[in-house]
Length: 115
Image (cartoon, rainbow, N blue to C red; front, top):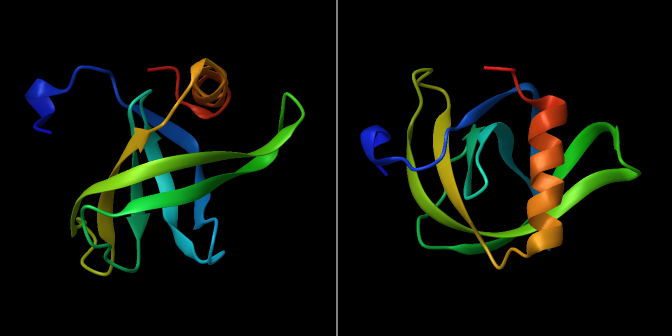
């Protein structure tokens, strides 16, 4: 999505959370910013677009008794990062519910810059 068309303000994080594929337990990259609709990762590996993925965000500390957040996402874009050794990956959240939305809001409040 073009930056000028973005509906929600993307929040940059103070901590870059490890984001893993729940089935393979392989790291997909580090979460660098988040909205209520999507995530951006930075990774050493590219990721095919159009994939439906079960992911887990690993928290650096316990947040309201939770150590992680499980989501289902769709990979929507992947391109080289400013650092040529890394890839930027855009993920759209799918199958969310009010409880998941509340957890995402708490995560943003806890880990996000107050920008």
